[in-house]
Image (cartoon, helix red, strand yellow):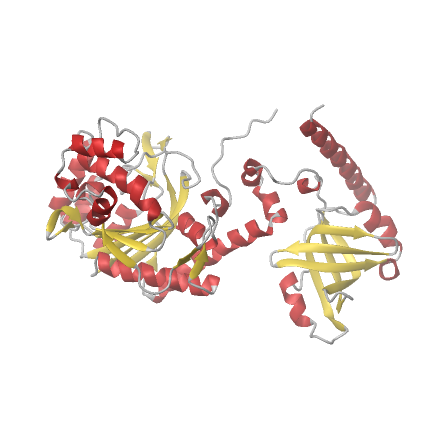
Length: 494
C-alpha cells in the first residue's frame, strides 16, 4: 500500500473515531454544534488586560479553534485560534471537576472549536493565559488537521483547501488579511479626494475596455449571449458623461486566458476616472495612493522582494519614454525606422522566440518591451507615450501622432497600473475602435459611443490590478498566494 493510501486510511480511521465521539455527545444530550458562544474578548485583547507585574487579570470569555493541545493528568493547555491570533487557555481538574476527565480529555480533539471563560494570569514563562472556570464544545471537527500527518506542502492543496491553509499557515493568513487592509486603505484615500464608489454591470452585451478574450454565457430569459466583463472602463466613463466627475470601482474582472504565477482568469481591478485632469494627474494620484497605503498598512515605503532585495516606493518615481527604453535595450538608434523584417531579425539576435507571422510591426517592438525591458523595471517606473496601436481609448500625443498620452507603471518587473488621458472625441474614438475591431465591428460598444456623443469632460483614468499590488506589497512569490480562492481545475473525486 502506498504512503498516500496509508495516510488516507489513518485519516478515515480518525474520522470514524470522531464520529463515535459525536454520537456519545448527542446521546448525553449535548449539542456538538451549538448556535452561539458569548465571546467577550479576542486573543489580541488579552495582553493589554494583564499589566506587567499583575498576578491576575479580569475574567474573559474567548472562543476559537484548538490549534495546539497538550493534555496532562490533572491539567492541560490548549491554544485557540480566533480572527485576531492565538490565546492560551489552562484547564484543570480542580476547576472543572469530573467534566475535565469525562468530557475534555475523552471527547475534545485538536481542530475542535471551544469556548473558555475564566480569569487571565501569566504563566512562569510569561505567557498571558486564560485560567478556565468553564468551557464548552462549540463545534466538533470530524476531520483532523492534515498537517498532523502530511502538512500542506502540496501547493495545489494549499489553494484548493485554503480553509486549512488559513489555520496552519500564519504567513498566508497575515498576507490575506493584509490584502483586506490594503483595499480598505485604497477606499479611504479615494473617498478623501472626493471620489464616489459605484457598481457597474458584470454582464456585458459587448465585452469592451480591453483587448482580451471574454467568458461568454447565455441569458435564457432574453435568449441572447452576454460576456463577463473584461474591464470596468466603459461603464465608468458613462458616469463621467452623466456628471459624476470622480468615480471608482473595485470589482471582479474575467478574462478567458491562461493561468500562471502572474495571471488568474478571475481577478480584482480598481478603476477610477477623474474629470478635468490627464495622465499626469494620474501619476500624482497613483504615487500618493501607493505611498499612503504603504504607510498605513505596512508602516514603511520599503518592501521586500521574494527574489531578494528591496523596492523603495517612497519619494519621486522614475519617468521614461517607451521609445527610449526600446532604443536602449536594442542598442539600435534607428530601430523605429527599421522594417518589420529587420526588427524580426533583430529579435532573433536578441534571443527572443520567433515572432508570429501575423504580428504587426508594433507588436514585434512590444515583444521586445514585454520580454527584455519590463522584467528589468524593478524600482517604480512610469513608462510613458506607448504606441497608439496598443490602446484605442486614450488621447494621441499632440507632438507625436504615433504615441498616446499613456503611462504604464511598472514595478518589480511587471505592469501594476496603466493610466490614460482619456479619449473624449466621439468621432476619433469611433475611428480608433474600428481600427482595433477590424472586420469584427460587432464588437464595438455602440451605446458607449452614443454616450460619448452627448459629451464627456476631459479626464484621466487609471487601472490597478489589486492582486498584483498585493503581491508587490507583501512580497508574495505567486499571485495565487494573494487570492483567497484562486481558479483551479475542478477536482474529480473518486
